[in-house]
Image: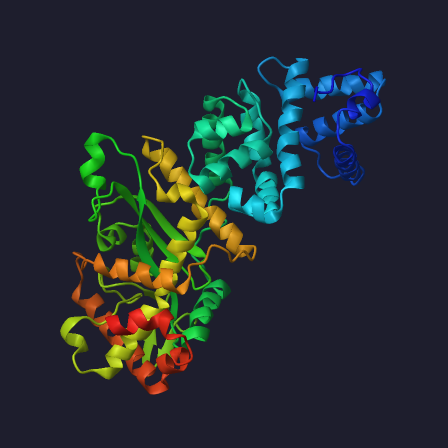
Length: 469
């Protein structure tokens, strides 16, 4: 259809639309009119659309036409005030809004990885940060379109040039807006979506695992995952992991609801988890005692031993008063209590494998090397994936979960690549970790926690854990 031009007849313009499109245009105009009457803040985008729609429906109004030009000049663009800029912007906005209106939520999720509701929240949250950036570029696009391009990049992992073709813009325009949006996500949500819990949130995390395993003191699991990257020749050796894949190592700390509480992005793929954690900010705050804290308010008394909040880790990590490792080797010989402890430990720590599976199912970009050669854009992509995941989980989204068979296979693959950590441990840390682990092992044996938790569970779900132990 021909774009609307100021001064044209609304009847002539509407005749080029299907009847349902005409009613949808009027519906958008009515929504924005209600928003204006309620004295709700109108962004420039809203105001431009609102006035343009009014001109479309009620033409021959010189005053309103002047308003369109005023808003167009304040909005910006390569040459503010040019009529084609308004038409192009309006058509692009309509492309996104019409897709929102016409696509089912399932279809929208398959294309963007998030629900329509979360998409609108992202657009609203990023509006103030992105709108000034879009005005400064030669080819401005609506914020909703920039967010849509970015989510499609994260969800499908397709090249920016393919996304540009889909949206009818240049490849450089798509590339710029995706980077701008990734940067805006990092800035707007910094410290608001991924953060170390304290107080009631910490207790709630621990209660999630306590309710599942009837064992106290455990709140989270920690492990690393490999994300494929594209590296320059000088960086290939450092980034090549044990399987020969050029990758970055990402450490993730999560609760049993798969909410990410802490992440470290940017370690080379050759780095072992224990070494990466030893250099991390989380290890620093744990050593300093600032998190998760000490004292009766956060510690549990387990058979006379004060047990501070515990993080489930594998044997690659160093022993400490806050990291709970499994028993290994000779420690397990003919000791049923330790075997039961290991079984419960392995079963509960599956949450981190579930998280890795959900992330790589939701975001296709995490499964293939990025098109960026530089590290920073790739780090921004990974960070955006983690933030959007947390927003989706907080909003009640529980899709992209692994099946039992997929989880078992993933655990088998992880065990095949397990390498003990080469990390320094102080005698004090080793002694403290040993006393805490012994107390929890005795508690599990006395309470029958593992048996109570898993007797009624299908064998296929935990068969691997028991045979492995």
